[in-house]
Amino acid sequence: MTTPPSHPPPDRPAPRIGLLGSYGGFNIGDESILSCVLNCLRSQRPDAQLVVFSRDAEHTRAHHQAADQVLGWEGVSLSHVLDTLASLDLLVLGGGGILYDGEARRYLRLVRAAQERGVRTFAYAVGAGPLREPDDREAVRTVLAAMDDVVVRDEESRLVLEEVGLERDVVVTADPALLLTPEPFTDTMMRDEGIPTGARLVGMSVREPGRAAEKLDEGDYHALLADVADFLVRRLDAHVVFLPMERHDVRHAHAVLSHMTAPGQGRILHGSYSPGQVLGFMRHLDLAVGMRLHFVIFASLAGLPVLPLPYSGKVFDFARRTGAPALVGVAREQAGLLLAEVDRLWDEFPQRREALRVRVQELRATATETCVRCGNLLDDIDDERADAAPRPSEPVAANEPGERAEPAAPVDVAVSSAGSLSV
Image 1 (cartoon, rainbow, N blue to C red):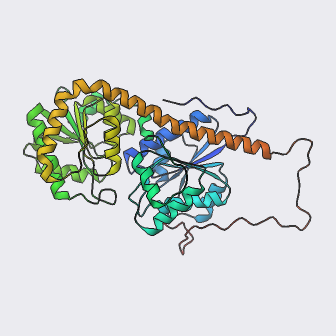
Image 2 (cartoon, rainbow, N blue to C red):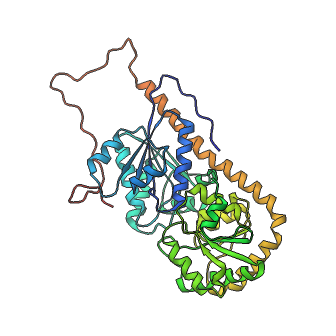
């Protein structure tokens, strides 16, 4: 889905728009967000110069041809990054869950540097939390307050920003990946993965513990998901396919398989696939049980009965918005409840299917609102540049001989001893 472009004056110069997020092939969800944000910006300004700040520039160049320029920003020359920032008309932060402890300050240093160079800034359906570290809280509180517009993807993120002390309007829309277009996942690809095409298939997503899921106990949740997988093998005569949404998920999928009593009925998707192909793979499934947010989003887009395993608020929030069963956590003592819930989901889904379709369509429409707001900001930038342009009859003011231009404002960006951006 695209949004009709705005209609600025035909003689306006093409804007340069930067995109900053957790891009570079580390996570399929983040890559799906980048695809959708690029599509949005291209729909709003077909002639724009789109510049992606990537954590792995080579990967982004290879997989996102919609980008006109890709710049690596971790551990590289400070001057080159700041020169590129200064050349922008707009810097788009996100989307995705990047405002959390240990990461927020890294991204917001670049946003602050852009602001101090007069670049407009826009938070594109970002996710926030957890935010407990003082440096990250301060960065969020001050940098987001100076942004032109702040849009978050869920109510949980808005509440986190409110608790941090951000004093400004924050708009809640939906995750940009809801606008992803599926690509074919062919029968040949299925055979190459060793997945039977005539069998009932259940998709499963697991993840590693970490800052975003710090309360997970590995042993407990590996055993719990193995119980669920074995139950679905018996209950539905199904094969279970694990979909790694990032590279660390593979190890945890193997760990769940090792706990299963029927590991021969399990497979792990090993190939390297685009987000659109992963979404296309969902059409082969009959049921989905998962932890990763974008796995749950993809399953919902495909119209599958999906049981989210809410390790964090963002998954719980999405489950609530789609009407999916929303458990309170992932712990071994909840095995009985979880098995009963997935059994009920399977039995009742024919009656739930239409309600899910309607809710997903509503969320997709909500996701387009972020794109519209970004287009409105681009219109404002066009108007501002038109007002600032000298009239043909007016001479352009020049500095008097010997007069020096005002120096740029100092930039609050951490620099390593080697002169690179601190990460």
